[in-house]
Image (cartoon, rainbow, N blue to C red; front, side, top):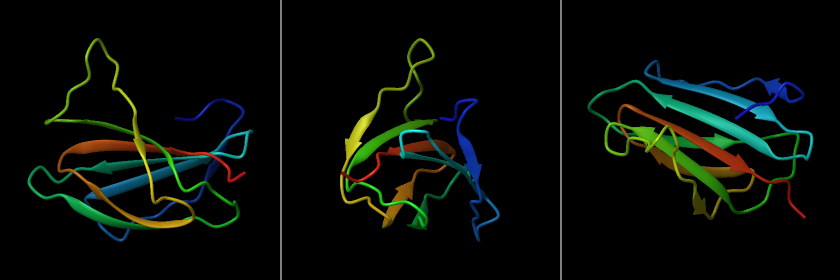
Length: 104
């Protein structure tokens, strides 16, 4: 998600069982990691990103009890309706990474 030359940025969650971390990449894209520590409940997350103009589509990676990685790899899935403000669902007991490119 983050490289040595990326900038870790402030990210927060109001849910004690949902951690969030974010980084900006040199190319202007943003990576956001959500960790849902609730073993039974999905988390609906409202996301707002400021300080960058982001594309409407990106790539989502989920790793959790219902979709374990194969050979330590988790395939990415294209997602739409992202941008600077969006809502998404993070499955229970799952790590979800989003990589959103800079808008063109």
